[in-house]
View 1 (cartoon, rainbow, N blue to C red):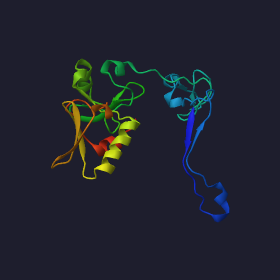
View 2: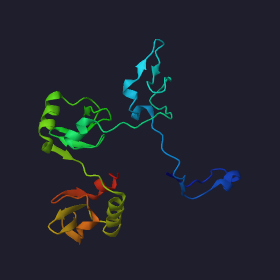
View 3: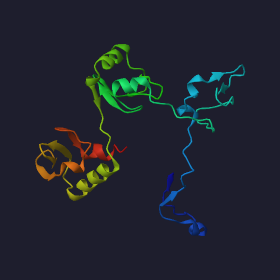
View 4: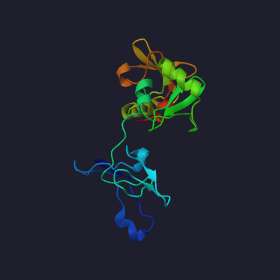
Amino acid sequence: MKIHIPAFKAMAKCNEHMNHGPLDIDLGPDVVEVVRCKDCQYYQDAKINKKGFLICPASGMEITETDYCSYGARMGKPRICEVLGVEPEEKFDAGSYKDAYADLYGTIRTNIGTLMDADRVCEIINHPDRIIRKPHWTEQEVERAKAIKMLYSEAESIEMYGFGIRVFNRKLVIATLDPSLFPSLRSNEIITLDEIIGGTE
């Protein structure tokens, strides 16, 4: 497991010895990320005891959402995600619902976290082709979008068009790129560079 420590600059002169640039530290193969209770498969079966405390069925201990222990096991993908062809927490559009998602427990929620109405849920279960998935941009694609904005300051959007990618603004096409630079871009899809830069995995 690797961790990133951002650069640090001390505010007081007496602490200047603590200044450092960004650091990437490899903690080794034996270090793993903990599973918080809210993401654990046992959390949904936790019961409240007579004193009002939430008790984990695996450890028998009192827990909160942010606790963790050696019994922690990440939840599997909810069945509804498999039916709809989406990942847990992945944003998608379905009719009038924008940025809907299936939470870790398999509940379909709107962009403000409320439950999606039953009619719409039935519709997308029976017609998963009506789900419009949001693209997930890789870190490389985000860096390439930033580079395009730096090289062509007037560039606004890109489009997968025929055998290439067009870089353009409202007035003209600025450049044509190799399609392998943006593998997440679908055919005839137009997306702004700002949307890519703001949408890394």
